[in-house]
Length: 230
Image (cartoon, rainbow, N blue to C red; front, side):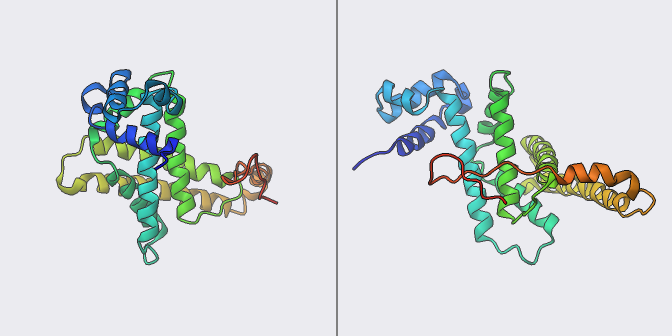
């Protein structure tokens, strides 16, 4: 049976999870995982050049995949869109098997050398939520939606880490309040844009905003970049 690099990476990820609560996403945990998997050190480094950092990102991606799978398997059609977003954030947090793994991850990605990786992982989670929920934004709203959700998600994550209420009920109440705050801002924006007295003042800013486009998506099955936007 042929074992792919991705298979071996998932084996390493499974193995390191038992060490992270004690030693963090560290070189010590990575080496222990390599030993547990009985992998050659050179092969392990080829799979994860940055060691535990690569596995921490793989752990985050695994949680994202579980969230998307659950969203696709759940009928959310009867929910308001704000409740669909809340469900997605909840599904993502519930995909975490152990809070300590996330706490250790936050410590890792708070380091200046890895802060960009952490920010990218957060953005990708919010991007996946919007894409899975069917967002079709093709202007500056593509960015504002994801930036706003990043703030909601990160603040909810921090609250969740310290929440010991039954079934994390206080977290879900906190999440609802954060989304309500966002909805109030969106309502205010709509009122401003709908005000005939302000339309002349907003004409130029709105025109510039309409020229902003999302980044070009990449096809995973083809080399290079395929521009699918017209």
